[in-house]
Image (cartoon, rainbow, N blue to C red; front, top):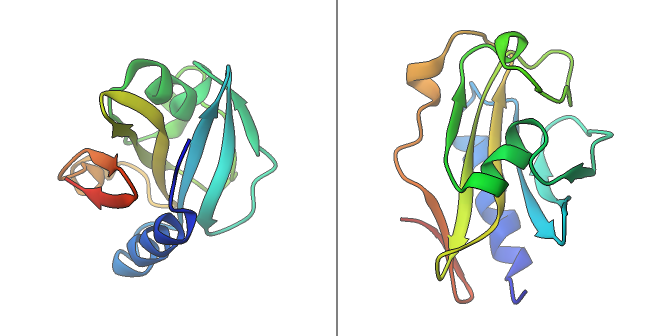
Length: 132
């Protein structure tokens, strides 16, 4: 997978800085049947590897569909990465029709579904990373 990790890291940092409601912003990359943690901002997580299809990030990577979770306590199968996170949005990173992994944002404020709703699906095209 040919990815510009510096650009992805800068994008993650920018998203984290732009929206104070999001306490955690990060990216996982698909590696076989696992997701591997990439660049992130926020509290460290012990979930550096997540099985494909498990939790919100794993489900998004498997389906290619964005998930908005206004209350993580009500989402079956949610993997707790930060005990203080109450809501999150996870969107697929797609290049040439293939899901490279999920990008997620988490908030300690619950029931923020409308605020969490992503404006666009994240895409990674060639060596450029853009929301498009």
